[in-house]
Amino acid sequence: MKELWKLYRVFFSIGICTFGGGYAMLSLLQRVIVEQYQWASEEELMDYYAIGQCTPGIIALNTSTFIGYKCHKLPGAIAATLGFLSPSILVIVLIAAFMTNYASLPVVKHAFAGIRICVCALILDAVLKLGKKSIVDKFSVIIFLAIVALSAFTGVSTIILVIGAGVVGYLIYYVMGRKKA
Image (cartoon, rainbow, N blue to C red; front, side, top):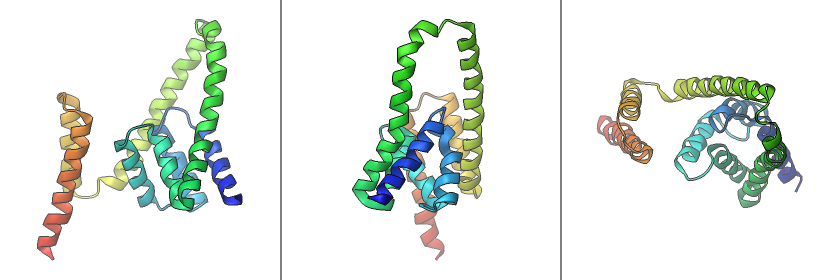
């Protein structure tokens, strides 16, 4: 029970400190989950993050659930998920209660403009960290550039891009890798 409470507390603190969504929280997760508590390796965290990206729901929440499950199975998944969700629910309820009255104030508008800029910087930081760990050879560069081009210049569905990248990655790294052995 003590460990479940710890999971809840840690993910509550991550949830309350994370602004800007799942991408923005990657560096915080890496510091807390990998470096501070060693609940997952960097590679495991990247895998959880990638799976969280591909599954329905909020990336950060899915990742929290995976880490909780790794640590303490279903009770850990529930504790981590509730810990991560609790601050968001509290903050959203407070914002909803006051937002309609204060949204038009210049100070609030300017604060949100600053927050959006901060979120962009946090997302860029997450992208750079993901890139360093994921784009490691000529094949990963090719996959990356192909997905960027398809995403930017076509209307190809994100689901198709993710499935396609997974299939290509499998073919390149597993099937072609076996032929060399």
